Amino acid sequence: MRVYIDGYRSHNKALSNALNEAAWYYGLVLLGGRMARHVEVEIKLTKDLKKKEDAYGYCHIISDNLNKPREFCIELDASTKFDFAQILTWLGHEFVHLKQFVRGELFDYEYGKTQWKSRKYDTFATKHDKAPWEREAYRLEGILYEEFADWYCGGKEFL
Image (tube, rainbow, N blue to C red; front, top):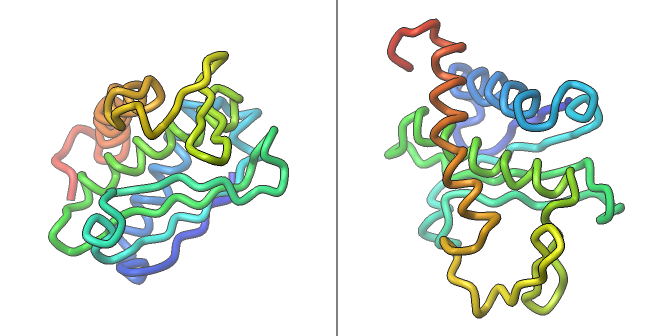
């Protein structure tokens, strides 16, 4: 897997290192080694993303091949009011979406339609936190972060 980190706070070595390691960890856990090595991820850190876009993170496909996407941009709110743990949890959430796209579980159509596994949803009629792809991401984000933090910090408190 190739991971690129840029944007607000990307000069912070501790945050960049943690994001890079977490991206690798989440990718290996969610995709497995064979699939993860074919994925490219740009992690874009944005100041006040929540204020601008009403979200703490996004996972965008930037591949030309939408049927088998392998190139992604994950955008995260990296405002200084958020600690590393929160940013890494959001990264876990967005990596679940990355996994859903790579494995063909999630497909976004134009005009507010989304396909989750074999069922199509009207995203305008579906509450964001009730959508099955979001429920999976919310369910796994904390688990992924806790497992990563235990591995990365060796049981010590995270930064």
